[in-house]
Length: 490
Image (cartoon, rainbow, N blue to C red; front, side, top):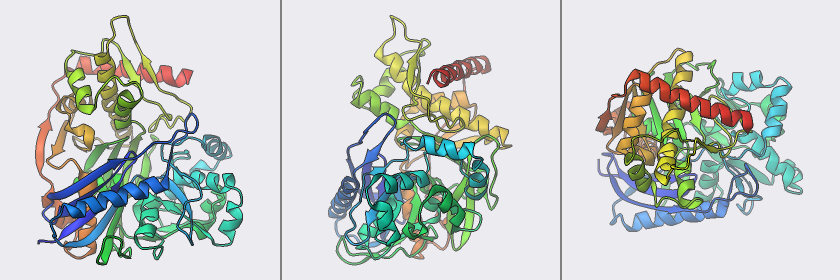
């Protein structure tokens, strides 16, 4: 198998492209950050043109570095829940993209919950009523942009998640489509029937005429002529579901956690749509050959973005590697905790009003204490997610991790210690991009099934708990006290 997949990975802070061989090896790649826009407290936006420009440029740079090897298909993975509304004729967005972290529609979703609608939303979508998801964001854009609702009624506008926007641009406006995983994050899609839900669209005031066709994760999403000879787009999935595929979590009970901008723990539940009693999310893991595989998910809103905040806003570290070095240089945080509720708290709290805080500062507190507390926050938030899963009757004994933060050996050992389970890292920690490539390879028939790609997963290193149970319990209790303080004062 000598073909190459061009995998586009449109993330929250950067766009990236990788050329991946059918043996799973990365042959060439390029990555470029783009600006984050914060118009008000709790608001997060992206310029859709910056997204398209950086994604296209990284794809072109990757192709230049490929040395003429043949591309057989394109795979797309993307930041989920983030939405764009655009003009069908010009392809231009009518407003900045509203990012998944954005909390501007909190009052709207709280009002819907207070009116008793959360049970309906949860039953059909597996989601909670929260501004995290796409539906209220789309409605906000239609209400905020003069004339947008009238234009939507006339069929002049289209809306979708970032994958959908990229597919529109890649195909020159010929294809308005998304896949089942991205659709499942909108609060408008019935994950039991596999269809857009008219009642939910009415509840959120989102015209169904805006919405894309929903396809399998490995399917025909059209052809792109942007990069020269026509290239078929054959695999699409939201980033966390793509990472689940890249981590080869194809059996019910297997679980992975990805640490990028946020942190996302996703458990394959097979053909069962598990209903959480702990405010975790039921969602679609992937849909291939018409068969839906479900997942249970816990979402951390800030993980890598916490480290980015230390670098870009506080300017106290150079990068993530520097943060890791500082953390490893001290025995503990000396009571310092950083609760990164910059845009609220995700699962299992779903608290839109909470805001971040650094607690426990003393005269002797240093940059190292803050850096270590920032890294520890990713592990402690993962503890909360696993505890919530345990309440739902699921207790994994091993966690597969990936994403940029997973390169930090110190962090993964600390994570194993506070989780009290084995943590394992694959050789390729960029499993999101690998998952998109695998789906595209299935979509072209290079792999007969996802399971055929399981051999691409290779173990790099495992981390086994060594922390004493008493110390573990004490540290977790101190973290929970810090979160309690943030929630009660936020």
